[in-house]
Each structure stands twice: as structure tokens, then as C-alpha cells.
Image 1 (spheres, rainbow, N blue to C red):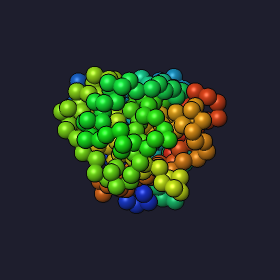
Image 2: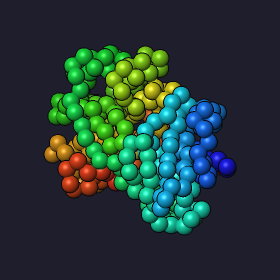
Image 3: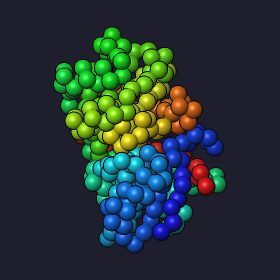
Length: 275
């Protein structure tokens, strides 16, 4: 198998979240996939093998397998498009069924996935207190318009909206403590977001559960958040999410929820080749 090195949700020819992609006739054993992901060191690596009329995809972070990864799925779109042509591909993931579309854009690729169904629930008071303490936040740092939430669209994420963009820029936490907290509460990431007056989101995602301090672009968390916004009646329509800028790795995600309550979310972006 050949490993593809791609950056998903790139900002033109810059940034994007690196991902490894491996296409094969069958998946390697779990230990081998985990070792490859750890050796690459990207926040996720996607392993795809043909299954019926579609593809069975598994995702590994350096320290664990995750049920669904958005940016590695976008990177997979460029790989499938280059190997089999532009079009739509059906994926089976541990997080649910995903539809992936790949199209040529200039000399490169753009991909868009439709996530598994979205759902959400309130964060318990104890869990919220632990999350705030992890990042050195208090309740006064949160924007009062929207409650903190646990949101899912293939994987579970905590989503907290901060009132101040400058406070988002200072995000920091202890990796070991974050990993323990996320494992206790079944979280893949914790997303801290800020909404500008012009309707653009800025996001940062702690990914200690996968052994990564921060993910530069998180399509699964974007899908989970946008699905929650639709189902809560808080915000609808196409949304732009800027992520990775505070890391020096600019990324741009475009997301729009399907209109039906509980349905999936479309998330798309461009891809650049790393090597």
C-alpha cells in the first residue's frame, strides 16, 4: 500500500490539516494500522478498503482509533478521485454511513462529505466544571447566548462558545489531564469556538483523546456543531469555520446542515498534497 500525504481544508495553497490515506484491497490488522498512524504522527490516518459498492473506512490517531474523522475523509476524497475519478462514494465508518463527493478544482481537488445523523445533549454540570478547569476558563468566559453542549455526527464532541476571540487565542491545557477527561466522558475532541459579528466561526479543537494536543481542522466536530445549531433552532444556512490560524496552520471549512431535524451535515473543503 502507498501512503498518501494530504492536507485537508487547506486555505488555498497553504495550511490544511495533514492526514495519511491508505487504499488497499483489505485493511491491515489493527496493530499495524495503529503503528502506521503513530509513525506518521498526523492527527488521523484513514484506511480504506473496497466493500460491496462502497468503501469501508477506519480512522486511527497516533494513540487510538476514532469512529469518524472529517479531515481524513476529505483527504480520502482526493485519493479516491485521483484513483477512480470524480464522483460520489459511499463509505461505511464506525460512526455511521457517510457519503463522499470528490471534484476537480483547477489542478487540485475539493471534497465534501455528508456526515452520519446528528444528535446532541446537555453537558452535565460536573463535566462542564471539569472542562472549564482544564482550560483555565470560568463561566464568565462563555457566550451566554448558547449553552455548552455534547454534539455528535459520527463522533462525540463537547462544544463551548467563548465570548471573546482573544480568549480563544490563548487556549492551552495539560495533555495528560485532557486525555483522562475525554476518556471519562467519551469525547473525541473538545471544541472551543467564537462567532464573529459577520457570522464566521473561529474554532480550536483539543484532541487529547487521540494523543494530539490540538487538531488544526476538525470536520467531524464541525458537523456535530452545525447539526446541533440546526436542531436547536439557533442558526441555519451555510457556515464558514476558520480553524488552525492560532497554530499557524490556516484551515477553512464550509458546512451546511441538511434541512431535516437529526439529519447529517455537509462539510467540504479543498485539499493540497504535502508530498
